[in-house]
Image (cartoon, rainbow, N blue to C red; front, side, top):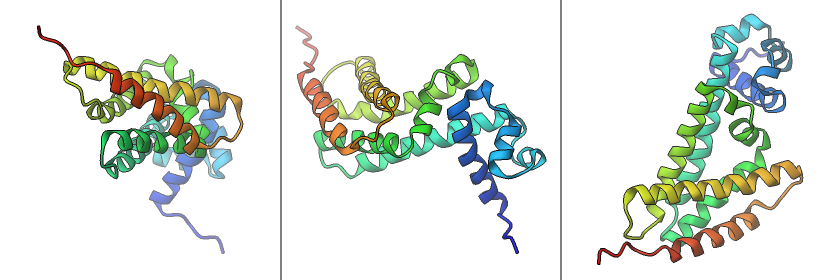
Length: 197
């Protein structure tokens, strides 16, 4: 006798399967039939949970982005100073990439960036990550400058991750985090306060 999933569990299962399908085929290359087949459900079951392929993809971006941001925030909250906050934040980020290449591809692959609605959703995730990073920059500089540097730090992690995912090999996320956070921390320490004189 087969066990029926609850609506919440079924939705999570569909999101998990859709992540793999969309990450490998892109938004335009994947169909609702592909996702239904991979999930072992019928298309009507998909439409019970999501109004359209676009709705499913947007929900997936939100879900994946929230998981990434929560893991970074949780890790950084355990830190006692800026240096350890930087390292723990990068460690959470690189562990997320190492454990789920498909999630990284979904957020930062080129497919989502060809659609205005999805581009806005991804920009919001990047903006939220930069907002979380900005307090690490403990230097007397204008807030707008601090936010620009925070985006640079987020871009540093994204750029390194893009290369690692493209190589396709497993990598040690803690080692990469140690190296990238050392680079970031050295850069942050070199930022000079604004001289009003």
